[in-house]
Length: 212
Image (cartoon, rainbow, N blue to C red):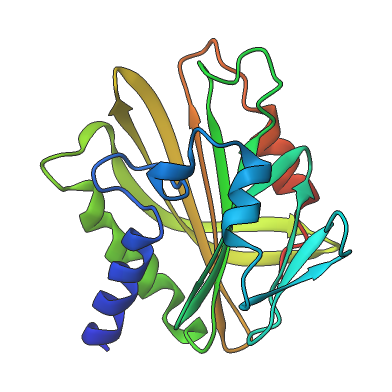
């Protein structure tokens, strides 16, 4: 059990969790390319099937059948990631927004097939990634149960939330994890939380997302 949790924590960190800046994002080399180029670099691979050949509206993971829409509540798909035990879709706010550079917003959804029984263990295991000395904490990580209203049902989930200092900006990150059948579902958000930045894209993403 412990070995599985540690392995999954490593996978989550590699997928963009805090080390050293806790806000889930695609690999750093993609950040200046924009969502369209990021999708072209990552989603157009043999692991994903595009829905709509000329201008895909979604990508479906061929092995696990996990679908990632190119637009969810105004958030744009920027990166697709396929791993041996996970499928991850990364989203960002539209770069055309006037406050995009000062007020970043990042979102993602991931599915870990076969790991649903360990949902709470996996979320709790990621607390340690915020306790890395390289991470400057503003609010210590806290975990606890949460309920999500989605598509006419209530999802009982477990959440991890913290606020970190990234280049002088307070970034609030939240991980929500739960079991859906045999699978572990994880949704992450990160945004600048200083009272001046709005995070409407995050809110719209969470409301529009077709939670598995």
